[in-house]
Amino acid sequence: MADYTRLSSRDLSLLLAGFGETVAHFEPIATGFANSSFHVVAGSGRELVLTVLDNHDVESTERLVRLTDWLVEEGVSTPSILRDESGSAVRFHSGHPCVVRPFVEGEQPEHLTQTQIQRVGEAMARYHALDVPPELALPTRRLPENWREVLVDGPESLLGMVQAADVDVRRLPTTSTCLVHGDLFPDNMIWDESGTLHILDWETASIDHPVLDLGFTLVGLTGGAPLTLDIISHLTAGYSPNHDFDFCELATASRYACAVLAFQRYNRHVVRFPNPEKADLWKGLLPFADSLTTLG
Image (cartoon, rainbow, N blue to C red):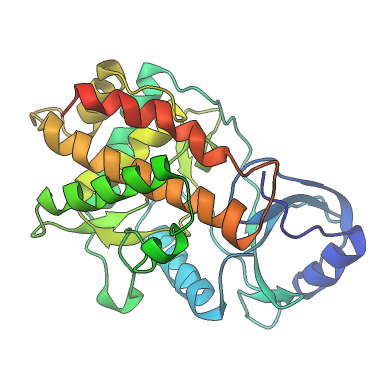
């Protein structure tokens, strides 16, 4: 759970005042690594989610708002970002941008069924097929240019993983790009009572190679545990039933995705926001990385 920002009932009331709402009850949402979110039951009875975008600035938050608006318009099942009474989508707490969304009732199972995994693949195929407007100005889902500086005193095992992945990823084709979620973990999915998948948290959305998004999703579906052919087969069956995937390419993308996520966890919890309790979170991805040696 991300708890960079802790809000009181008074804080939330001030933030929601612009929406004409008071706070009857609230609780932190115990998922996510990058931002602090709160489930709020308003005095009107409306249920909302307020997210403090701890790791975003104004520019990246406005980009997220534009992307979310566009996704909703395109029919992607994701919660919209609400506007306050002045028409603004972004409010601020202690300098951090905040957004408010409607709360989506549903389940967030840690481990998905085979049918759910296949539906994730189907959902990815749909948003990968969208024609992304250039004005959204999305970045790529890659390691930052300064990753070597960040890891100069880092663990050798992490440095070796990132170095190898940075070389291997250059094997992927560069001609095909699409919308990439890049963080499709089970805690960024809500399954409502009808079985519909709602995809949350597009903060890491980018334009990149589609197989890279499959790689990030495979890391998410395993939770860092060893990757199995069974998970791959169900995800790809939903994504493209008649396409034979190159396992070497999938392994390369998954290895790179794993390295990016491990780097981010180390950078966040050891370098930027030192937290002894979370300093070893990146190590939870090592079983997944080790399992890729059998795939390519």
